[in-house]
Image (cartoon, rainbow, N blue to C red):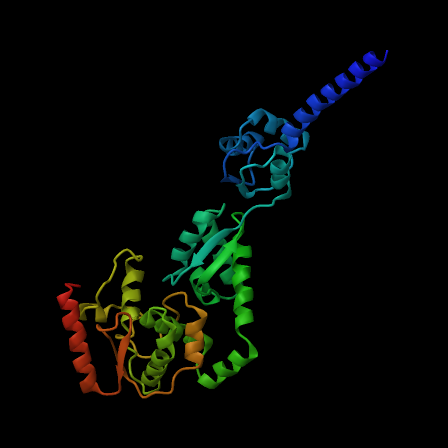
Length: 341
């Protein structure tokens, strides 16, 4: 009798172990054999979800069964999901149901116009560039601007994180909040003391950024030089504004390595060789350092600057036309020696 009872108990343990192991493998056991990312759009069907996950899992059937049991076929969140090796079906399904997606990293650089920026950004979003432009055009018009290009001042050069499913308005709101946070009462006071409008500050900051190549240690010096020119009624004569004017005409498809005399007459309100005063807007997205450089410009007497061939990326500054002529010739000779045309 005791032997029979022991056999029954043993059988119970065996059966329980068998079904317990099946339960564990189905729900908790490792079913993901390699890491990867899957994109699940808002309008995805269940088959599309299965097809997206399939390349990363060992057993599609067990995943599909768990997914159906947990209602993933009717209830899921769109997103970009990081699938990690060693994950079980239950955790994988729960991640997609809960919308625990992984953000993408976006580098906002010194884009010449907003359309360039949007083209780069939308390579990592569910929404296409045309939709993005149209929605941001609407945002601009709500603010009394003409189009998305007038929103350039709200953006700063930096690296940001966004979800693949970000909407254009959500995208803009992050930058708008950053813009308002940046303009503290201290900066607003300096803005008033400068005698410049905010649009003029951004336009000058974009020139400072381009002329400095983004190097913080020359920005305040360059800002002081251009403010000297502006306040003396001189044309700013900034090469980057000429390059921008040409780029706008060619939709940024004609790279300019060297500004030539023929370029200086390019018709554009942004061309500071052809027009006096500060351009009507920034020639690129700027960083915070370049804005602060304009607000805290160096008090110098410089009028001229020229690239320094002995220190690549840096400049020689002077208030003397004669000294500038010497510096300019040295730079032109260097360009010629490198066959830069």
